[in-house]
Image (spheres, rainbow, N blue to C red):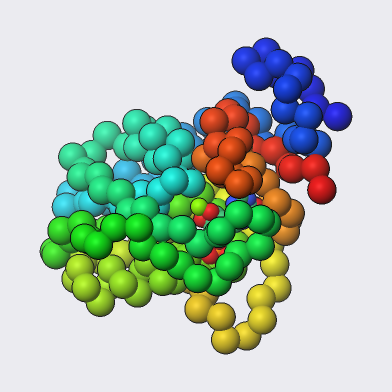
Amino acid sequence: MIAPIPEFGFKNRVISRVLIDEKTIAARLEILAGQITAFYEGKPLTVVAVLNGSLLFAADLLRRVPLPLRLDCLSVASYHGGMQSSGVVTFLQNHLPELRGRHVLLLDDILDTGQTLHTVRERLLAEAHPASLRIAVLLRKRKVLPPGLGRVEADWVGFEIEDEFVVGYGLDYEGEYRNYPFIGVLEK
Ligand code: IMP
Ligand code: MG
């Protein structure tokens, strides 16, 4: 059962459990932001947020990174509803950000199979020629993957979670729940 969350009342019945609450997220972002700031100090940094999932993560993380950075967004879809990765990553815009000579930090909500970030990274490296490209994700699922999948590793990870379907704080189920301020487990 879920604890009462005043802003959301008791309407969120399908959330069976709060996995990571707001305060825990904020405390972890503080640490990640410190590491990222130290790492990119003095480098021309462009953050590329992968939408829609990383919207809240990016907004809260970057407010804690006091560097003269640029921010770009990429819209991709890797899920077409449901709870399984489709394996197909669709870029929802034709133009890539201008990244030549820039140190790029890709932000995404979650590393599941890693195919989304693998595809995005390969395309940016091949077509946008950044000086470097690193990855920060809010969540990483602990899971064993079949060999042969295009997989990437993240350079910064907010939280390691079990292989279960989560929503909130940017993550959706069929387009909804992204606005929840915590990360919760969706009831089966
Ligand atoms: P991957 O390509 O399998 O790593 O999947 C990454 C994308 O799938 C993420 O950016 C999310 O949009 C979505 N995704 C994966 N796991 C979850 C989850 O537990 N909840 C919500 N979305 C998820
Ligand atoms: Mg997503």
